[in-house]
Length: 153
Image (cartoon, rainbow, N blue to C red):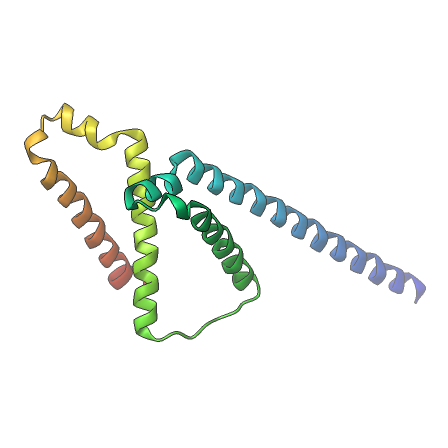
């Protein structure tokens, strides 16, 4: 009987240790990914560039606080399995704001890597830059709609 209890106790200790290691590895991975996202946003100068384009340089600190706090709140909500039941109108607004963020991120990445000027110069599209930008935006919108309405069901 003691042998069986000892085996059960050893097994429970091993499971507790595995849970501790899994929690530690998950926390470490979260820190690494979060640091990479912050480094990426910093590298692209999204906040200062957005403030410059919208002429709101005085609000840069507010932008930074909103980015940090929203990421933290969403992470805690995700891990606590919290769900909020919003109406369809609110969800459309949230989806629109998320799309704006992704669009700004993609635009900043494109601007930093100078993709559009290189394409325009290489293919001599100086007179058609409006059409190029319109095609990029339309393609992004149509691709997103196809994904969210047809593929992601």
